[in-house]
Image (cartoon, rainbow, N blue to C red; front, side, top):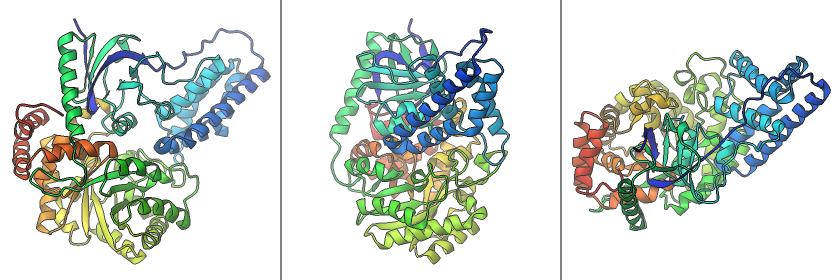
Amino acid sequence: MSARYQGIGVSPGTAVGPVARVQGPSLPARDGRAVDVAEETARAEEALDAVAEELAALADRAGASGAVLTRQARMSRDPSLGALVLQFVRTGRTAPRAAWEAFGAYRDMRESDPLRGAPDAAELDDVRDRVVARLLGEAPPSIPDPGTPFVLVARDLSPAVTASLDASRVLALVTERGGPTSHTAVLAKALGIPAVVGCPGVAALAGGQRVAVDGDAGVVTADPDAELVGALARRRGAAERLADAAPDGPGRTRDGRSVPLLAAVGGKGDVDDALAAGAEGVGVFRTEFCFLDRAQPPTVAEQASAYREVFDAFAGRPVTVRTLDVGADKPVSFVRLGDQPNPALGVRGLRVARRHPQLLDDQLAAIARAARESSADVRVMAPMVATTAEAAWFATRARAAGVGTTGVMVEIPAAALRAGDLLQVVDFVSVGSNDLAQYAFATDREDGELADLLDPWQPAFLDLVATVLRAGAMASRAVTVCGEAASDPWLAAVLVGLGAAGLSMAPRSIPVVRAALAQVTSQQCADAAAAVLSADGPEEGRARAAQILAPGANVIN
């Protein structure tokens, strides 16, 4: 009987193929042998240096993951880590064992450091595994090459591993850990690969074992029967036909209602994908991704140059720039936020400007300078705004810097409930669906165990979105929805029915969303929105929307 594993579908589509696994090194044993301290120390130092160089080289060609890889390279070169390795060697451990234990001590040391804070666990484990593998003479964690296309299964995928991923060979991604906005989820959606994360039990899958992956339902089936394989093939074919039939040009419904489809970009490296997908502009320019690898704050001139590259690529089109959204899951070395009991609820986003106002003023000056030198329609918005007073404070500073059109992201329920008040002091608002869901359900975006609460089809979440969109309509202001919610083809139609004037998403999602909207009328969107809001839960909402938007055909969801 086929084993069935339930996880979180984070990138749509289906695939059937053999399992290939990412394997890390085994824990080096302590065998009690006497060690040559000088020799083991030299081996450990060479391994740390070599891994740092390897990660730095990967960062140079990794695009959006480059900043994370640079941060990992700095970990490997950290003198305090090297000192810990030496300390363990001196107590009689071999270099591999000393490195393994030193990384654990390094994690503990960093967790108690209020200035530096704890490193990301997955990033640190990846550096450790690379160092230990080198000392053991084993291959570093990497994408396997079984010779045929495969389903990649892992506990989690590090940025270094994903930087070498070849989308032409990987049929689907499956991980035990992770949530709907994890690195793996974002990568899979960007590459258009079906993916299921937060899927307990898949460690039992053997290399070469045939599995079926349903990225829509979040289900992985071991040894699927012919009936399931045929059903998934039919769904895949229907989805491909719909994507192939996607019209060129701007997004619009079947009856001609315009729905601008915008791209989320993190810098110049994302621009080509956005343009190739037919993006009508940039819905969120995530400026922090340009500077995550910086040890010192970027200058006004450096920022203006980076922004100008994106602005020029979208000449004559809207580009909405989000000011630095650092803190919580996006720490940067040039901003010291100290030890916070709960970083997601602490100083992050616009709140960083309370401590570092010059950082915001420099960024606004850079955005204004780049906008003056470009023909793009540049707007600026602040993340993590909770009150009208915060929105007004930001708008005043932005306008003083010379930025004409100012807005804020609605990511906090308090802001959603008071969206009408916010629109009295700013020119626009944009719904940040990922964080709005996180704060609405008191659920960490990285917690795969609770990811069902972050399902954007949750009626309570859509109630908040509808509140913001109604406020926009009353103020005669267009409101855009950003994030994972906007990239779901049928949910995109529901958002249009609720009143969204535009949608911002990963570039790879734009063609299929364009195709889905072209199949439905404005009235169908409105009817589906009403039906979903009255549903008891996400599954009922999906089913109701499908009956209205695609009766008789479960094409995408």
